[in-house]
Image 1 (cartoon, rainbow, N blue to C red):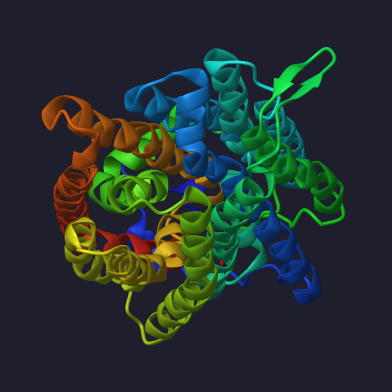
Image 2: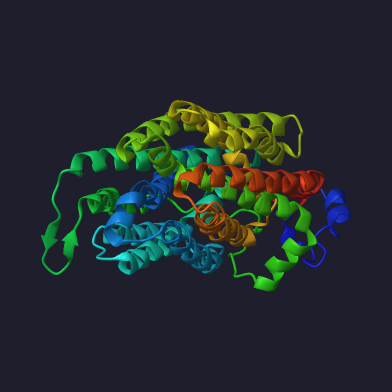
Length: 465
């Protein structure tokens, strides 16, 4: 099969003329649809557990601050950097394994480890033990993304990849909604429960049961992951997958830097935009309008559960429709349109005069932004050779988590603690973050629109589908 492995990495466009002159070799058969759908279902639930386990802490900021005596900045480090730094760093190493080892087994090991660490958060006896457990969640979750995205891209034709990634994205949105809803419900349920002293562990506070309840099911789902099938790797000409030197991956990215700046960097800037309402939204409504955290969690979780599946499938169908019409920039264009609409809404949302209007604005921004979720992942997957696809996915995770989810919550906290010097000014910090990050995200994506279309055309010619 014709694959980009035959194109000199130092000049990835050099093989275009030869590729255009050579008729494409017929691709290998696709896996049975039942296997592809079953794998997609299982991996979607895996994604749900990842987001559920990582997101529930955002609802517990206030009780954690009260019991452990920490500041907003320390809480932001716990939410962001403690999770994101291990996630990004370990993820690069795991992704190199995913490009030539069994990806299904890597996902199974990952979910077992991070689920155990989530349960460990429920046994933490102080700020530092909670931070260590949180770091374990980040390290464990780093293995699922590049491996599961690569599995999906080998299970589905190019025009269907956005459908597969959007479906897995549905798991992410379900996880976010469940984290808020179940977290709120559990907080309400255990509100009057006294602390429990467990031998050999210590004091378990009422809010810590939330971590234990959401973490335990992931340990069981590990066994379900092992029932899925590892699909054959496409685009390798029948050869066994081999480890690719880092310099080869770096050379590929460098020679097509504008495209990857838009698909990877733009996605990271978008994550910096969206991380703030995800991590500080419940706390903002609690502080600004006095709503109980349990009520905020249940309402926002319900909203997410309703709108996200609709938005994700809208984006997937739009990507498929535009791609079949021959629009080579379909995936990235959907991301751009979503940013142009959602950024102004996110800037205005914190300034609304009542909580229902804040929730409505955030719901609108979330819907529009979520339309681009599946296409944003498909965008870089379909233009990247199989042999380095997971590593580019890990780079995306690094941008989304180390840069975005580590920095965004801290930036807002620093605005609040040191620029405005008032916890009540959280709304101004959120508005300022949306204005800055949203503008950068739009500019980065815009500059890469034409290069991305050229990269997509090259991929159609040179990569086996």
